[in-house]
Length: 152
Image: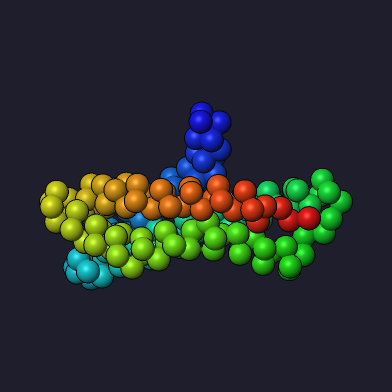
């Protein structure tokens, strides 16, 4: 199990750190410019998710390119689409539930509950991430089991 946890941390943690920083910064900026809690929650969710998935996709492209070099294979558009397909399998269900229901709700209410935009956004992100990663990790392991991540 320790090996699995290390694999998951290596895969998700760098994107989480970058996403956390930009989620908080975007929440602060959104509230500064709009003074609206709903707009702030939606903007923070959008920015945090976009940055997170950009990091994951770039990481996947980089590791797949390395795998292609080892196999003396060209990284093609077909392989790129396989990267995208693997991400949809890994994140699809969790992301729909997270983005449409859980995360915006928490991003709205936690800052109000703790009376701090920064801490409330931080706590909302951590709480939403817990519900996000259970189905995500299960889907990630499934995608490996069905060899969806083999690109040769």
